[in-house]
Image 1 (cartoon, one colour):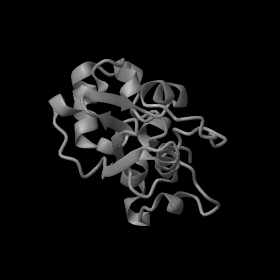
Image 2 (tube, rainbow, N blue to C red; image 1 turned 90 degrees about the horizontal axis):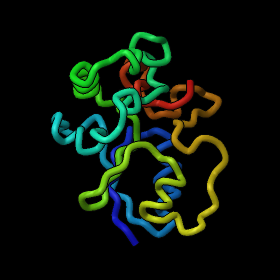
Image 3 (cartoon, rainbow, N blue to C red; image 1 turned 135 degrees about the vertical axis):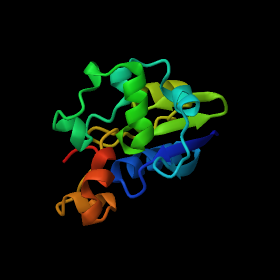
Image 4 (tube, one colour; image 1 turned 120 degrees about the vertical axis):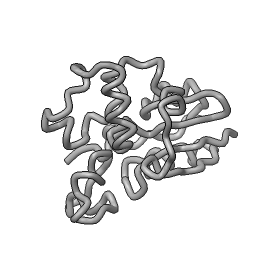
Length: 156
């Protein structure tokens, strides 16, 4: 099948569900930390450049949810600066196969792109980070890093 470079927030259960789905479909997933990657404007725009600026952002990031960052009100340069300064604001996952790239995990788009091979899809929003009854801790972050580490999480 296909080898996918998968930029994620390590410890996020939503990203784990996505990687599990890809593996079940027969793909090889090479996971990399979104935060640890040395992003440049050019490199990030290879993923995001075709999308409207507002679609670059993780809608569940605390600053976005709180209205501190309103993606629809940001221009190209300001949005790019924010994402480079805090990669956990980037909508994820970012996926790459050869020269082709995808942002987010829309199952229909992923299926059309590389094929999900009739794998049974899990319930709920596959693009969201899933939290257990313990709340934020299931993302694998530390309490003192709450705001920064959960900027990339899905639902809170």
